[in-house]
Image (cartoon, helix red, strand yellow):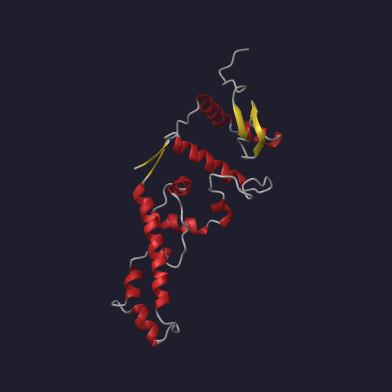
Length: 203
């Protein structure tokens, strides 16, 4: 019987292509970790076939492009929020709503007011985490249409467990096979590989 499918006996896979669960060792011709994942793959046959071709060729046809200006803007907002907190700490602790408070926080000539006006209201009071350009572009790829402000809000809503997965080296969290978030790290490592293979562009 002749088929046009890719021969997968030469493909060494490290993770289940459906749930992302890591195999204990590279497995040739193995794509799924369980019968449940194999059944799920049946409903995504076209997508799996495209992935097999990509693996066989050692490349991915999909290329992501990210704006360096957006990354710099994210870091700018992060620094502005940090600087505002530092500046606020230098002012006396006054009761909210008092005359002194109104003077400090509503006076257009006050440094606090000036600084606060430079920060979008939507992200005021948030604490955006530091992100390397690799981490930033990975999260950005999840919701590429977010502007910088909405992206900042989104990042601040992510759990510490999620952010901790975005690292290139194994950790106690990453290698714990019982953690449902492990596939996040697997996807991040794949993103790093795309950057190394020049399949991700920063303009």
